[in-house]
Length: 397
Ligand SMILES: [Zn+2]
Image (cartoon, rainbow, N blue to C red; front, top):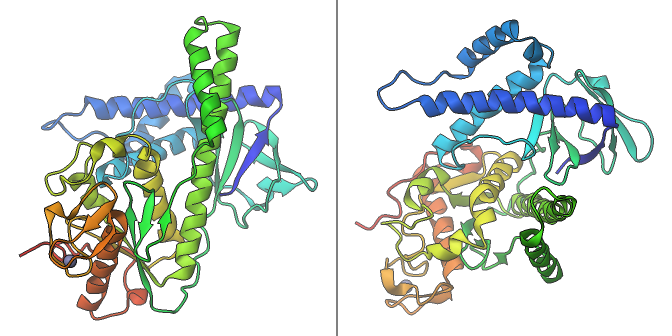
């Protein structure tokens, strides 16, 4: 992940906050427009129409005009992207942004000289209407940066993230297909039997978080102490998020390198069939547990993993309809609702095959990808990036 710690001066920080405020204002306006919409009404304005409205609003409002048009337009674009993610079922509906929470903005049309290195550990970046802001050059900055995003986390730390779609990783050439399933007991299970867990907080950190939460409950509203405790909690949570993001990068690189074809469930379908409240198609999946510990990777994290896989292994990702993947025996193919002995164990009552339930599901996903490939009579390497899901492959007839 190319994210770097920004080191603004106090004056620059004030200017950055102004940009954040503008981005938030424009975003919230979009939320309002879309919330107003109801079935039967004329559709809510799209990106192009909103850009036109923004031009009007800037003409009328001095304070908005004083801000950067790039920041404001990109907030509209982010919102449009968020809506399409929502319709794709990978993300929740975009909601109101509050001051101090997930603040940030995006800058595009970055020129070659806008990012430069000052010394071994210090870099400098040009931000419109803010000037040259220093950042910690903690690793190589990707070549040909076209855009970047500035964020402020809840602990008050500023970061810059350069948008660079990672270079595709060459396939291993072994012809191997791997199935990856969102686990219930683990974060992700591979058809190879490997189980992967997203790192969270260590036990000592969890204990510390618990202590801080108790302290927070006792601290008086608006007090100095409360502010300090809140910041400490935010730092711990930010650490957890960082680890999760690093994990996604590592796992996606590893999978792209080791396997030729990577099969995952189709999020568009699973968004409908596998809601957090459980499903008709898969009543066996324990929902309570999903809603708890693993939630991070199961929602945004999972979408991110698939997204990074698509960047790193373009054309090698096959998306599978997840229906029955958890109830079908990956050895004999029989669908058996009662084969799940417990959360973690799968035992086929037809052939006796026993396996970790998540691994069994991952194997079914890999099998389905095999079908998807041979049914089209071509190698997946030459196939389209976004393959049509093979809807009926896993259905019992
Ligand atoms: Zn079986």
